[in-house]
Image (cartoon, helix red, strand yellow):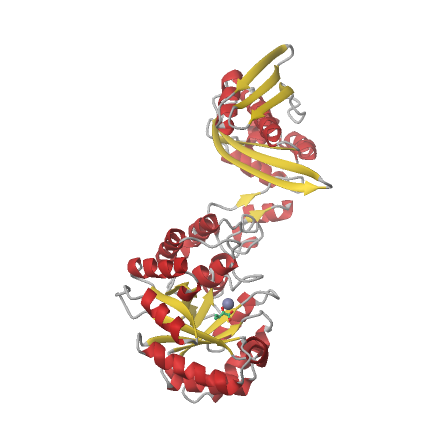
Length: 514
Ligand code: KIV
Ligand code: ZN
């Protein structure tokens, strides 16, 4: 029988405390609802003593959440515990959890708390007894356990369990320990604490040395039954254990990890995307499981291998976590197999085009634009000299007149075709849509604005602004990407590049598909 691993999510507490600005209670509630739908067992909703808004968030979340258990954090201080319990007073579906913590390493005791171990033991016991007045579900964390003397660690655990702690959490607060080293700590706790069977053993890692997920998996193999972490691993410094990594490791390596969780893995992708949007926290492309590159294949050998059998290079299917299908990056590293695959997907049989010629032109175009998209392939296959950059639409001049609260005028001077020159004037405050609509009108191309991303950086005292625009034309996605020192210029140049791509695409000889 598979043993259940309790998933304790601390995105709203350890994760949120690491963001450059705090989330308001409504954003936190939105995240809690997503976590509940994902199926996490326990939601650590916040640290109510830390601010009135955090108190409000815990209150709001415990009023709303039904299926997951709600938990809130408290130091081993009477007022913290009372306020923590008060914030969860509306939670009626189950007993709420109070999560107590105190530093137990010599370093924390001496330099942070300026006390001795005897004081820490006394504060811990008193706090468990106080929390017990409010709930029978008490988690006790020995902060910096990874660097705590093992005798002290076992002694304090034994005593807090004796007084009513029901979950014992062993945090590696500074991400210092190695998996084998941590497994020895777990083993010693299980062998030396006589009443350990009266409590659940939990682990909590930080990722300073990149060991968080590895440590979490090793810990469950050695007897821990609760894992704490956050969605996408957000948290102090290099973050906490990324829950999606541990959950998918259990799921993927069930041959050696005989465990299960209550997580609905199909919701992982969507949940992480929504949470990162709410937190305004971008997920790095190579982040395991949820990064935009996690299911992309770039090299020709890999793309060919995937097409022959996805298992060649894919240990998890993107569909299993609710992500879109696996995709290929079409670059100079791609081979004929990927090109054929995309052409087939667009409905073109190999009889309709010359694969070798298409591949040769494809490589030429990668030299110009780095990455190739579906519409480029189609155009390359059926239009002569497509790989040459089109300058049909060209920006000749741009004037931007801006007077604070008085005038906002943009004059665009455009060349269309060989001799045709056109002037466009935008004096709408909504410059993104206004410029888009004017260019759409003048080009007679019925495209729709799909997405707009702008990034800026300072390079050698110059500001560089990159704009990426995504437009839809006849159900195809077209991309424009330009860089300049002016935001409006980058935007207009990106749009002009899209217009040129669409025009080339429109000129493809109408080929009968399958
Ligand atoms: O990292 C840590 O020690 C913590 C505790 C409060 C559990 O976050
Ligand atoms: Zn932590």
